[in-house]
Image (cartoon, rainbow, N blue to C red; front, side, top):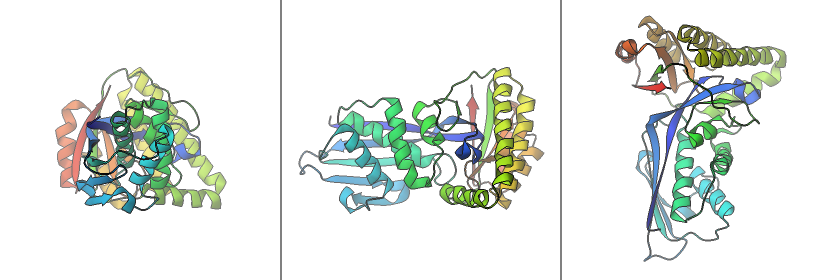
Length: 313
């Protein structure tokens, strides 16, 4: 094929971050207003194996062979080549673009990987089932996050709300009424791998205490699924606040996140919490549709770098 385009959405975790790594359930949803896109164009005048990579958003312009062996983009291409049993790629240019904030808990790395793998599949006329696409993306996620939960690659690949337990097939579930979410970006890059690693250190130091917190988050996630299925939006907001309290106890919130969460609640949000690894990145707020502008305005006044909104339905 002369050219091929692949894309993938962002994601947010509604409930269950960090505890999901330890086998508790989490709920995540796609955010289609933000996405990654990868376009591959053939360069037939060049020798096979010559692959140019361009990613303006991260100021990357490189040949594939000049990237380190553990670079996520190179790793994604290599896992696809191994899957498709391809020894040498046709000469091509791979252009990567994304509107997803980096290091913000919105799955930018997984979205780029999914988009790249989809584009490679189209370019090389190689079918790739979604299950395999998710599995390959998970392998690349290990470079980004060290010990990934598997939730990013799952919700981004399948592009639907999922109830996720590590090691089990993801479950979709019904949403009784639309759920309006405002996302506030602190503008502070945050390493999910570092946050996950610090939680693990705490767990190794005091397993009973951390298991108790993980259990509490698991119960909140299970209750949240029931609230979503039953349309109990007020209860869902309380559960978000409860989840945030435990995440603060885990040590993964931050003053900036706490400020935005407080601002959202002050502006009338039904509940608010961090989303993702924490220590920066994004917070989310559950709002009535009539309050979206009020909450976004208050978040900007409180220092949010940018805000987005999405509907879960």
